[in-house]
Length: 349
Image (cartoon, rainbow, N blue to C red; front, side, top):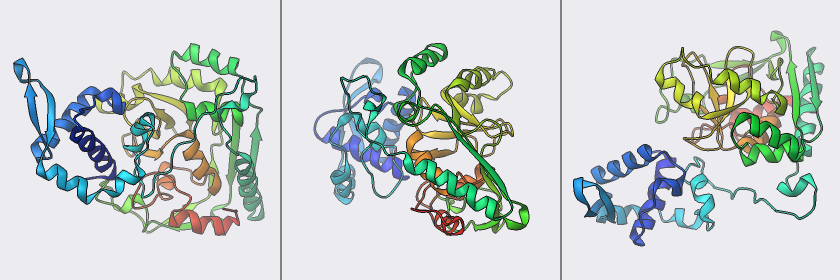
């Protein structure tokens, strides 16, 4: 059972033991997905129905001896479980070893754009500049252009055109750091850095089945050459494209249909924020199937906080996945590949 399911199971069993059975909205889950999860728990013997109404629809559950045993064996989750119930949907989706509470939004009565939190983005700019310097030293090239912050009016206008609310994590970056970041770097193949696949999610068969992999990966660049890392003014165009999905199979349509695209890689694939399934997470969208829906970060800020610190290294999604760990699919600054690349680039932690 994956880490995500274990945290969800722990919270759900804990609530049922308290005499409360949460609904799908409590976890911000699709109702069918949630009901199927409950059925699975009944089948596996963690819970059983205690009350039914006509047509056999179960409205109440009670925990079994197996469920109580699970709570006892995993009581360490109780100490990291957020006290703020609004944070529970994010906690049950977390796939790492140590959960750190999400950044709180601090509401202010002033007109400053900084009321979205006390996040320090200065290291983002520094890390991109270091990556470009490292590429130039290796006979490569690069460029970074960071526009000013968005205004609330600009964000609201785009939200109105999109017909959705931009997720808080993305909105904080737009309002507190930049509305548009263009960044890329590149080095000749002879100066590329070689990474080893051994300690990343690509080799974790418990989570993902992958094809045979080459032993080493060449990193020749980072960022996106065509349109940059994100651009508020291009969100409408990106997502108009996303809506033209008649040629895709139903299996691929789902994540395309319920996401907010914020960048493209120039090779027909896109990076987006999941709006329905693992809400808020950064995911990879492909029309070719391979790695489609791969989860890259728990939210927009977290993804870029990790990826930018390694110079947004990688030209393909498989490159990014090489910077994950065996425990989580997310790009991580603490992964073995990230640590060795940072030494190569002489970046700071």
